[in-house]
Image 1 (tube, rainbow over the protein chains, first blue to last red):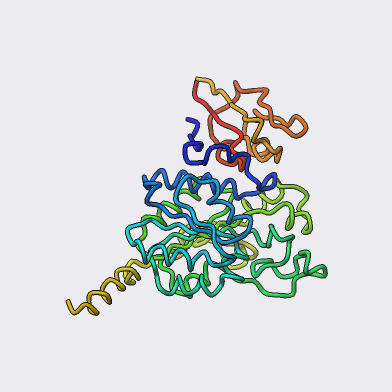
Image 2: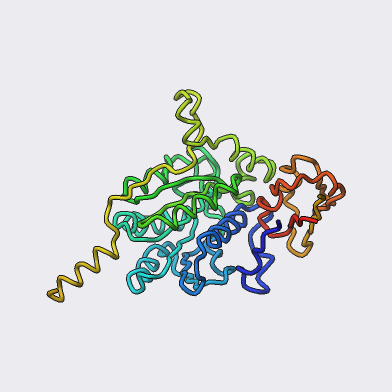
Length: 272
Length: 62
């Protein structure tokens, strides 16, 4: 019954550094379950991250892990995959890391359709550096650098990934733990760039500035605002106001994968 | 079959997510620590174990 997470965690690493109620722990559990379901050999699995709260995740996992420069997770992961195409590459990171500082790396990794799984935890804020607004902070919300409300429109990460050319795009929330591992499993099995956006909660730097009295309020909001793709098909545009879709949003199995394409280039260059 | 709830106190940060999302009201907060005063009511839905961000609660089959 009880799931054995400890065998996937480096000894002595718990309790982790995340704040009470932070959803990153829930996502880490989901990732561990997904890796177990896919029976990934930990010696043949690279987990790559940049900088930030979410990017602390690989430090806890007992696998080949790489903690890199801010926003450069996708770039380093591309390097790992190119050097060792047989390796399973999983990227983890937050919204600020992935779509602001690493925005360029993110879209170009999507464009190339390189075979990796990117688990992007979107908590609407830069948590670790003190609550600055990120490209995902909703318009009008407060952050430490937008004391009068954020004037910027937001990035829809999933739409951005689809537009940039990723071939598997899914979204879920930290309040739907079973769906997290289901979607990550699909992402790992997909041959090509898989983006799994997990809408997360940050009670410490986002919640307390934006009228969420507790972690529970934030988790309940995730539950009420999430609508599955199936349920949304039967709803009107008015009913979908202020909600976001969850589940597999896009999948394309036709587009060629980058390491395969590159192997062809090598063959051509060798005159074969 | 009843369940045995193991609470790893060292890991618990007292966020109370498990208490809130338990459908059978098995769990309770003792200031900053979760306790399980009514384990006989547990239906083993696993919500507490799945939603605990801190690896602090486990549902064992007895």
